[in-house]
Amino acid sequence: MASSSSAIDVQGMGRRFGDVVAVDDIDIAVQAGEIYGFLGPNGAGKSTLTRVLCTLLRPSSGRATVAGYDVTDHADEVRLRVGVALQEAALDDRQTGAEMLTLQGRFYGMPKSASRARVAELTDLVDIGTALDRRVGTYSGGMKRRLDLALALVHEPEVLFLDEPTTGLDPVSRTRIWEEVRRLNTELGMTVFLTTQYLEEADELADRVGIISQGRLVAEGNPTDLKRAIGTDVVVVRLRGPVDQARRAIQSLNAVERVDTSSQTLTVSVSDGPSAISPMAVALAHTPGILVQELSLRRPSLDDVFLSVTGERIAKATPATTSDTSENRAVTEHS
Image (cartoon, rainbow, N blue to C red; front, side, top):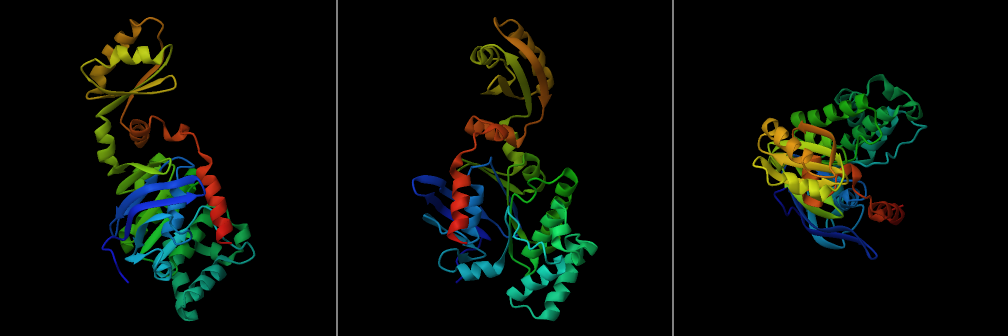
């Protein structure tokens, strides 16, 4: 029975694997027609939460509704209304793309004629083309990703879950997947829940972003607003010498709003980058034991947001074994 006006509504969600906490007390609300980017490093808990929302795992605590139905109490209703493309595409290399799509339609109770008509629509929608008549074993990685996306769309779902859809793809294939996701959202009004570890992917596609670290939601909002909260500009200083001493040397300057440190790098949020660079360079030059190797100016990124709330960068965040272990157990539980 419908219970939520949001396409996805997560309240106090937790998922444990024994003593390991993979998802820790998360609240998320995704509105219909929204692209929600779930961003974080490997091992943060992104895939575990996605599997809970897709009814592949039961939550340990809290509750969630998808398309208005509780993922635990009404799992079958949820499955009828969602499309899912997980990291590992479950494709049969011996079948053709058309055969797999037709079979998927039949699984959802579509008559043969309707299933074939839907395959024809999907051929254009996800840019598969004549490859549909070839065996899947001959497909490139990008083609397999697009076929997996098409399989998730056969029954015209209300909510589409994409779990790191472009991991391992070349830049051209990645761009094509982005174009498909945008078109699905724009033309069909489809709600998309996208997990990713790629900063540019979340920035490019998402209306809102939730940033997860070690199983907890640490920041959420429009990508532009999240970056604006860090500062107007960012100055990156790579140096040799005592980082704390370098930080003290520049954090009192007028234009400096925030200083974050990571290894031998200072990430400095400033109100006016061009005017701040010279005073920073002078201050560091007069600090004993500091050798500046690089000083550059750029706009804030989502990685800067992650750094400001976790003290780490996404690319360098220590991957916990939590998610890897969790996913292996999840597959075992449902195999």
